[in-house]
Amino acid sequence: DSGVTQTPKHLITATGQRVTLRCSPRSGDLSVYWYQQSLDQGLQFLIQYYNGEERAKGNILERFSAQQFPDLHSELNLSSLELGDSALYFCASSPKGHWDTEAFFGQGTRLTVV
Amino acid sequence: GENVEQHPSTLSVQEGDSAVIKCTYSDSASNYFPWYKQELGKRPQLIIDIRSNVGEKKDQRIAVTLNKTAKHFSLHITETQPEDSAVYFCAASGAYNTDKLIFGTGTRLQVFP
Image (cartoon, rainbow over all chains, first blue to last red; front, side, top):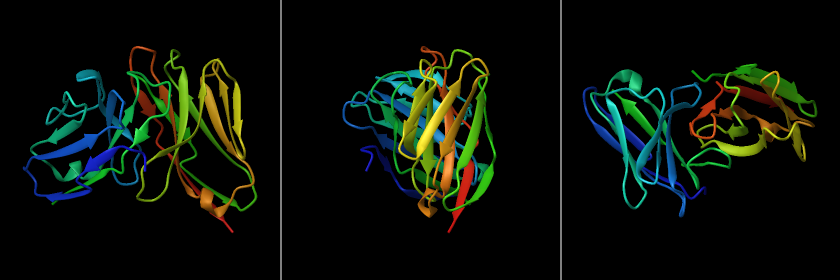
């Protein structure tokens, strides 16, 4: 157990719908990172939040948004869903605002768009 | 933008043989290079990392080498075992203030008994 909690574990929804994925970082970690992993693909960086503020952005679609709340949990919102959005979405957390130490990944949320 | 290339995409070895996975990165300011192992259906887990002020690091059967001049780093697994079978991802950080960790595309390692 990495200490990073993601909910839900599985999500099945229809095209055009909107979903929210939730991530609770390890206790004390200030940074939350979101990654998308499509079938048999690598980990695509979406976005990072540090202590409530957006810190870095990757190839995140405009239909996707995220936020980090005062209690440091984060939510990734995916709207106007398309079949191609089906993927495993990972959240990771680390103590600092930059990568120089291990980041711990959650178990992921598997999103299936039908 | 930043890019990390990883080769090979698949690697099959006999138990007991060595396996080598290579990565190159584009951002010369990158200073942190972790390697993650992902078993089927599970989360990526850090197996070893190296920082730019170190050329080589070893942890039991796993070693990583870094050549900053060539912007190249490699993972070496010796005496492979069937439980080493997984997908391995290399990654490189951006400069201190860019806060991105860019992953390679992964190498699927299969170790046959």
